Image (tube, rainbow, N blue to C red; front, side, top):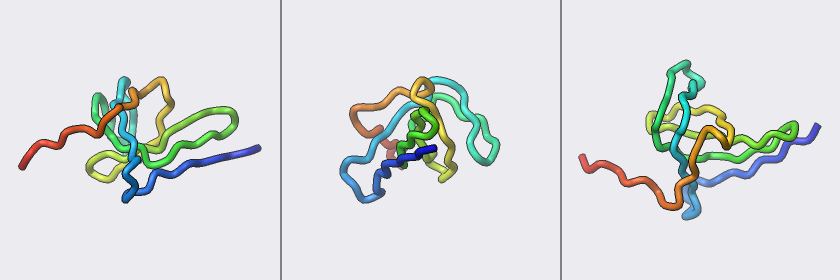
Length: 80
């Protein structure tokens, strides 16, 4: 059983983002949909490719590639 992981550092200029295409449940049990999230880590485990993503409130969850759309640019943040 082989597991490989690629991390994206918080300080890295190559941070990746994606948009949820399907409802997903985070580790705290909240259902998320159509949010733009940061990809923290890419993982290959048991022939499955997954992303560990982080929401704006700090919650995380694993998603599969068919559940997200990878964004070519970081999302625009709303000005406070």
